[in-house]
Length: 190
Image 1 (cartoon, rainbow, N blue to C red):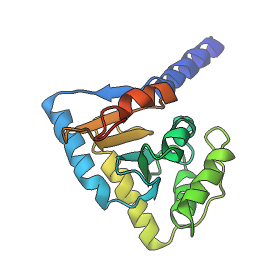
Image 2 (cartoon, rainbow, N blue to C red; image 1 turned 90 degrees about the horizontal axis):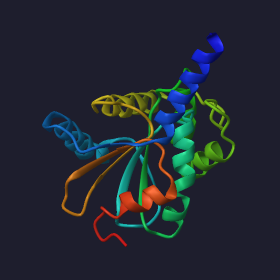
Image 3 (cartoon, rainbow, N blue to C red; image 1 turned 30 degrees about the vertical axis):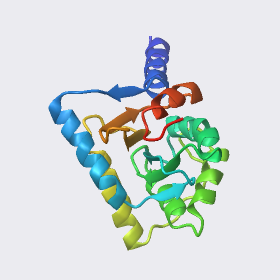
C-alpha cells in the first residue's frame, strides 16, 4: 500500500516538474502576473546572455525542474536568442537559502550557477551553502516574497513581456522544443 502511494506521489511530482503550467487566466491572475513582471527588474537578479529579449526566471538551487530548465535554456542563451535574468529564491528545502546565497554572493554568479547546475544532485543542488550576509538574505527573502504573489508560486517560473507588451507567465520545466514555441512570443523573436 505505502509503495503504491509513493509511486503515485512520485508520478504526480514528476508531472508537476515536467509538464509546464501556462497561465492565460482570469483578471486577478493577469493582474498578479503584471505586477510580478513590473517588479522583476527591481529584484536581486543576475543576467546571462546578450540579447535584448529578456526572460526572468525564478529558480531554487535545489529544484530538479529548475535544473532541467537551465539545461534546456543553454542553446538559446549561447546563440544570443534570449537573455535570462536569474532570480534566486529559497523554497525547496532548508539548504536552499544558503545555496542561493552562495550563487548570489559569488564574484561570478553565472559561474556559480553553472557549477550548481552541472553538479546538481536531486534536491541537493550542486554547490556548497554559504552563510548569507544581511543584505543578501534580505534580497533573497524579497525575491521569494515576489514569487509568492503569483497564484501558484512554484519554481521554475518564467515571466516576460510578449511582443505586444503583455505579461506572460510560464511555470514548469520546458524542453528546448517547447521553449522555442514560448520564445516565439518575445519581441523581435526569430
